[in-house]
Image 1 (cartoon, one colour):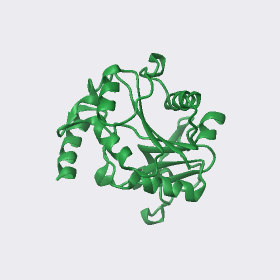
Image 2: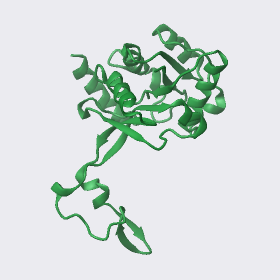
Image 3: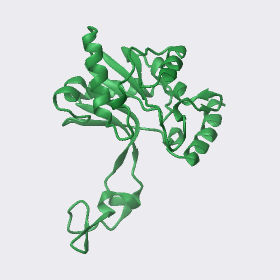
Length: 231
């Protein structure tokens, strides 16, 4: 199976200026994801998609391919992920390269245990899923069977159930996407305009390796984690 590893790196971060190239424990943030991607034996090709020439030069210096400069209209604050992936696939298709699936790896979740990407791809292929995402467990207090929605001034269970599950031990497992990895078949991306398709698999992440960097406080947490992980 030919799988494209895609690392999106948009310039113009507002929460942490220059976040993607900011030095985290001695390395630019982008380097953590690049190293994980290049170490994955199941990825056919790894590319960086960015609108910034400085990011392009940095990516090349780290050993990742940067085949194009992403159009500015696909690098805005509210640009969805899907058209960024579709642009990369279409560009490579015009160069004669075809892929069965895309593995999206976001820079803001920089830490991935060794072999994590390859394990995700192995499960993705074995399950014949349309897509697979990395997840973390939802805390019991936020389990959808214990979450209420306001409807006409009253609270109703978000699941639509009429009775609440009384015991924590009886709650079914629930997960949330952690943003570290998205794997999607090419036909789902291009023909269904979807990241998820109909059959969605998952791989549970290790919470000890998880941080999603959006704020200065997240960055401080990542600094502490990087020091621990690198030791």
